Image (cartoon, rainbow, N blue to C red; front, side, top):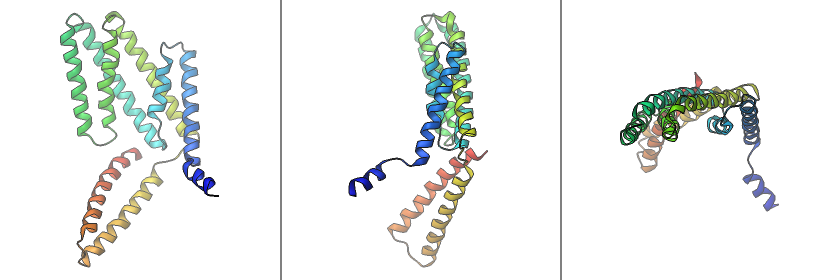
Length: 222
C-alpha cells in the first residue's frame, strides 16, 4: 500500500494532465499551420506555445499579448540597428547591448506581467539582429518571419486555452484573496490581544509579500 500511496502523491493531478494535453495540441496546431504556410522556422511557433501557455486562460492571453508587443518592438529595433550599423560591428554590439540592458532594466522596474513586454523587446532584438550581421540585406525578412511565427504560436496557445476546458482567473484570485483576508484577520486579533512574538512578525511579512503577489496576479483579470 505504501508504494501505491507514494506513487499517487508523486503523479500530477488531472488539471496538470489536461494542461499538458492542451499545450501539446496547441503546439501541434502551430507546427501544422507553420508548415502549411511554408514559414522558414516552424520551431519558433512550437517553442512560443510552450513559453506562452499557462494553467489559467486569462494568464495565457495576457502573456500572449505582451509577447506579441515585445516581439514586434524588438523586431523593429533590429531592423533599425543592423542595416545602419552593420559596417561598424563594435558600435552595433554596443547599441544592442544598451538596448537589451535598458529593456531588462524597465522589466525589473515593473513587477507585473507587463514586464514581459520589455524583456521580449530586449532579447528579440538580439536574437534577430546578431545572426543577421553576415546577411544584413535579409534582416527585414528575418524579422518578419520571427514576428509571424511567434504570433502564430501565440494565437494557437490562446485559442486552445480559451476554447478547450478553460480555467478562468477570477475564482483563483477570489480564493487567494479570501485566504489572505483570513490570515490578516488572525494577525489583527493577535495584535489586539498583545501578542507580538517572532511568529506574528513573520506572518506580517508574509502577508505583505502575498499582497504584492496577489496584485500582480490580479492583472490577468482584465
